[in-house]
Length: 189
Image 1 (tube, rainbow, N blue to C red):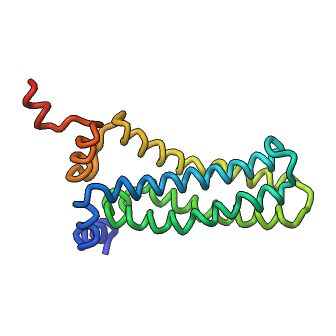
Image 2 (image 1 turned 90 degrees about the horizontal axis):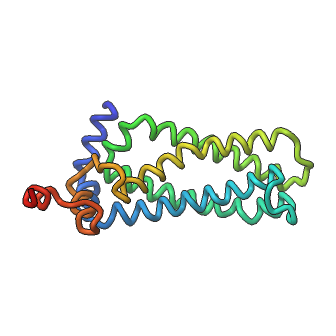
Image 3 (image 1 turned 90 degrees about the vertical axis):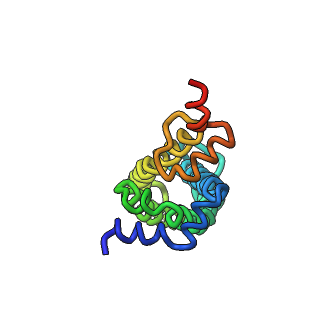
C-alpha cells in the first residue's frame, strides 16, 4: 500500500469525515497545536539563550533547564494528539508532503538534543563548546516548525490562498470574514 493509497483510505474513514464536516474542529485543534509549538519553542529558546550566556544570567543553567524543559515535555503529548487529529482530518495534505517527514525527523532529533542538554545542565558540569553546538543545532531544527506556524498564520490572515480541503475551510473562512464566498464575488460583478 502506498502513502497516497493509505491517505485516500484514511480520508474516507468515519473519523476523518466527521472532522472534515465539523467546521470548528480543525481551527480549534490547529490553535491548540500552534500554541503548544509556541510554548515549546519559547522554552527551548530560553534554555538556548542561557547556554549562549545571553539570558537569565542570574540563574544557573541547571535552574533554567529545570524550570523550562518540563514545559517542553508537557507540550509533546498535546502535540502528538493534536497532530494525529490533524493527520486524520487531512491525510492527503500531510502524509503526502515531504516537508511533513522533514519536520518529524527534526522533531526526533530535537527531542534527543533536548534530553541530552537537560541531563548535561543538571550535571552541573561547566559549559563547553559541545552544548553550545547542540544549542545551535536545536535552533536550526526549529526552522521547519517556524515555517509551519508562519504558513498556517498566513493562511488564517488571508495573505495566501487556501488551496486544501476547501469544502470546510472556505465556508469557515467566509463566516469569519477572511474571504468572500465565490457566490458573492460573482454576484457583485
